Length: 544
Image (cartoon, rainbow, N blue to C red; front, side, top):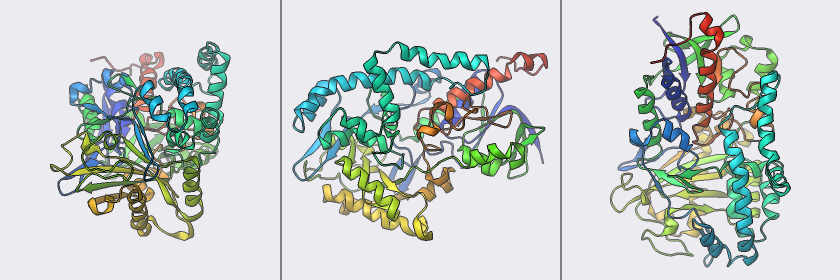
């Protein structure tokens, strides 16, 4: 079999792998991306799922994609175009009541006031504190976390977060501590009294977390989803014209423009290790790709379970990496519709602001809690939490004229069903529960459906390598964040096997279509391959 040589081999052409490859190639390194599917993009792809209907297959909305990455890689120049939702979120409550959350502080106060005037008055202080916390943490998301046992350099790096916190007021420090230690429910109850208002914010605390809103740490998950911006506007949600695949196609073009090679239908069988160091990868075809470094854009649990031989690292580290907590309790559907849903609280099938928002079915904290408890006891929620985004209201390339497509992102389902049941047998039954749940609020929804696509946790695992269906490559729990992600001593993207790096969502700062794990990992790889020792050995790459 043939052997080819590169500076870096990237396993997986999802969005973080493509970002990593683009930055590495931009730095002058010879890079190859190896993607097992026929198209790059991982979970951020667009597909036709019914005749004439296309939509984002798994990931489905834009906000967290880091603006620095968009600018550095000139993604707009490579065809990316993002449009904004008309409103942030819409929460149908019953036949008479709903909460349409617009953009802008004054507009949001007016929307909240009918539910609680006190909550509307508290909103400016809440927003100010959240923005302050987010401004500090977004900088930390772009940095490599301090690593335990790393010597003087790591001590210096550990001081940086401390200096930022020292500049905060005592009230801001308390707020930050609450975010990192509290449950979403307890945190929000300190600020708001209306159950509907609290639910509107709490949804972000349980997304992809497979956790109760009363689970400590879910307040941070809420914050994790508050970092976003679209087209320079903070807190705005958007849609990529052409679906999420348009983002990863632009990333691929950026990587190739800098000289990276991208190959699809190329399955990596194992990471080749010699004398305690990664030397490249072996494909299932038997071909060897020699590389000075290997960057893995796959979950660490999958990486060390399937691609790194157990004897290549210590038994303790192998057990820790393969034992990471995973499972996000999520279920995805795409539906093709003959008309827009007509909600009981806002009847009509003509495009209105609430159709061009994130439509969230989860009207109270108790509702979110029951959905989680049902899943833990029975395998899925009897009344699931659903976010529906009707992407065709922003993008007429996705459906035939007058028709529509919607993404349904559903919580909670058990990653592994009880009693030995398989999601292959159960997913259609749960899909019916989801449809019934939406139909209670929009009675024409079921009859409007002309096609659908279903992804259970098992489908996520098989197709995208997301162990236990975990969209974050590992839970965003307190023991798997920052310097503990994926494990203490390896938060700097360098894995226990020398020359092996983690560049996907299992690394800091975690999941979502941010591109930051790929961005940060590329920086560390470039540092290592351009180190003085590498130059002494005559192995540092020449700049292009």
